[in-house]
Image 1 (tube, protein in one colour):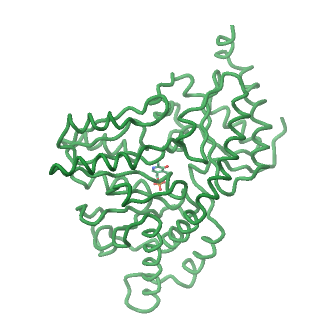
Image 2 (cartoon, helix red, strand yellow; image 1 turned 120 degrees about the horizontal axis):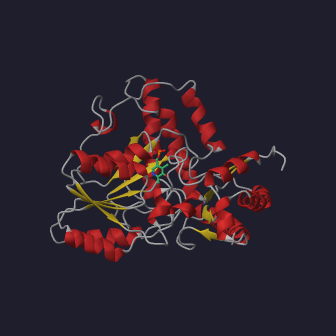
Image 3 (tube, rainbow, N blue to C red; image 1 turned 90 degrees about the vertical axis):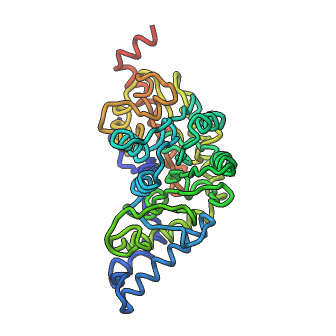
Length: 394
Ligand SMILES: *Cc1c(COP(=O)(O)O)cnc(C)c1O
């Protein structure tokens, strides 16, 4: 196969391009509107007003009040803050959270007295409410449940409203358990209402929905006491010191408004594209889809091809101009199979041969055609070279 000059970006779960509207909206804040939001003169106050405008836009997207939004440096920071600072001595989470949740829990277990229960996610990549209920009854002092809204590798969507309802009922008997969700993959892809879903804290990140890298937010319900995360200046009502990333925050506000504005229409288009890819790729023999087909993000597919290495597959796709991923961006570069795929119960050798395709509203039918043309021959070529495949086929 010839090296292709096409550029096909199918790794939107890792990051997204910034939208044209976001780009235009941000430019003034990279040039003439550079004032420090804490300064009293007009140039500073202009920046301060831009931040508050973004806060309002986020609040309206999540159905909360602007006073419940705190800007952060992204999804990882929001997760760290919520979990580290909430003061829980027992935490319930799931086996396949993002490392920005799992590594915080592990770190707390190692260095403090915090205990953590990890709920299984089964072959379909979804927790069972009964398991959560049982874990709460076994650990009535649980101070935090943190379950991701949608998984970043396999796109499965968790029963967030049911979890919220369960915890809210649980708290009626004089208990104080908080519900945090890492919604970094869900915002802009799934409708979210923090009131209706009884969510106490929610993490999000601008660069996953066509905003900029390094700007995210943590929603904290009024009445939930969360100590400050970064001490210093009085930014973010004294909770997160440091001169604000004004451009990133402006981008976040515009991006969230755009993303939730045309959600239904966008998802309908993505579902059609997803179905097309799914139908074609599943024709390749000994291929499986990882995670539930229905309860998953409209932009995500994750396949395992028996007998091949995910890394080799990615390099071959890259030669054909296609950017995709195997597991998460954080695990690529290491030879460990994805903790998400292992949590589904996949054997190591199959977890190694996985491919994540994640689309965005910019993904075109032509790009998909290109993927569907080059993927089957690449899989066939790699299998022809694979000693593992020889053994499978005897
Ligand atoms: C990308 C991602 C994060 C990390 O967000 P950053 O803004 O890159 O720190 C956390 N959780 C999930 C589910 C993600 O997909």
